Image (cartoon, rainbow, N blue to C red; front, side, top):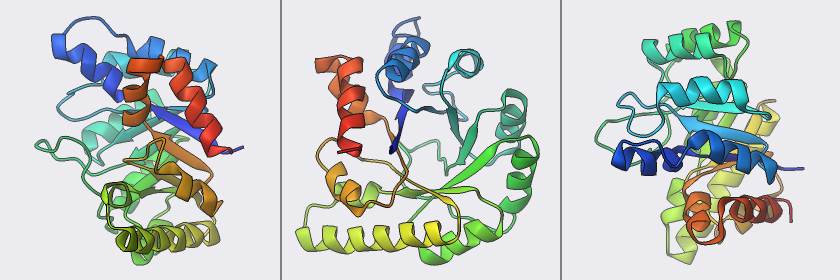
Length: 235
């Protein structure tokens, strides 16, 4: 069974637009889990533009599946993760001016110490990187347990030839992750239309999807949106 991580950041985005109390991300997590989510993913940003510290604390206590915390590799976030102990930490790049994560993390050897700290706290560490073979090899060298391949470029392409080239890059990267004995994950920009090509590769064991699920939920309800995506990735 292919795993589905549902990112609920944008439930919090709607709440923060009015700085109020609804919609409640904790409730969204419960509905997602009840309808097929194997993991709840949240990104605690430095500027706290959507998910708040209180959300992280409550979700850690209430989630019945797994909690995946996306975060920058900063000292502040490392300390928060060590205290809260999510099941997985996914290290991502972060810029204040970006609307959403714009690319994969540029891994460096010095990330090894931060990964070591997280693993010592009993946390699985995933790295969100481009489908770059050398970067994947470095991920293994510095101790990553999993690689989430950034699929944003693929999701934004329109030309069929360019799409095919990018799909081949993604496939080759995923195979290398698998060969290096790390979990292979995909995420960013994936929706109900472009997910099919990745599913047909039959190599990814987990997808993290947020914006498209929350967008569809506006019209269908969150339960149906999650269930439909879970069905698609296991079709």
